[in-house]
Image (cartoon, rainbow, N blue to C red; front, side):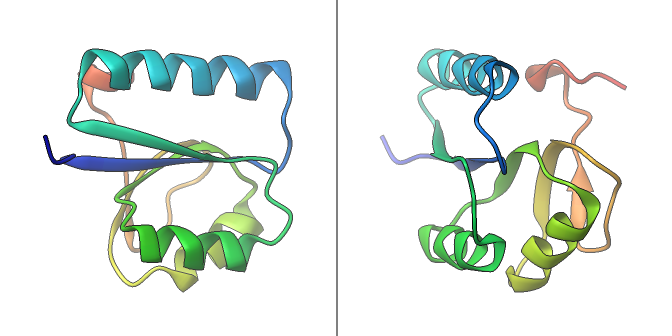
Length: 105
């Protein structure tokens, strides 16, 4: 089955909180096989990570990235991006408010 959604977990650190978030995303993806989650944490070079995810074809972002790093990350991407992350909305991405992700509006 070809994945419908490629979601990247991106974080500058790897703490218990990031581990729990990634574990939850992987459990969700296990129950919904058309979703693939790829982890990049800890990220040391935001621009390089963004280029890698652009080449992979990521369509969504899950994680915790500060505003400046998120701006740099989104500046590298060539398409709109679904953001399921703690952070402020940016032009060119769509903050998620989907009940399936547990973020109902």
